[in-house]
Image 1 (cartoon, rainbow, N blue to C red):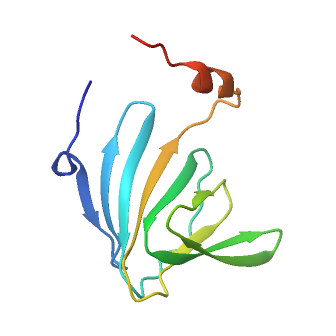
Image 2: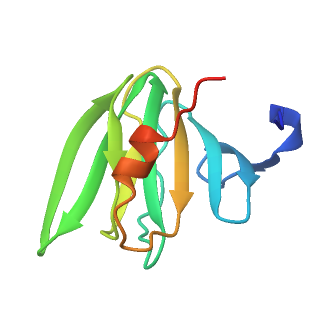
Length: 123
């Protein structure tokens, strides 16, 4: 077992105000974002990686573009966002910081659901 503390991560404060603590591994990445009220993240997309967000606290608006249209939806604590490769950004229109964890990895296209679901051996 390996325990990595927040201080072990790579800290970055983005120009728009988002604070990120990254933990990079050979096959995936986990990072925590703190998005202050009023923050508008830059539009971007990912060609290869899969990005999953899990909202820990607060709320924000997810924006994405698909088929020439722009979509918006409020997300809050407990919501999971599977980003895909669409252009997207997040906007904190609330008066509280929004915190979320991001899981990033490079998918192989092979379903591993059964392996993930059943890989628990009682000792």
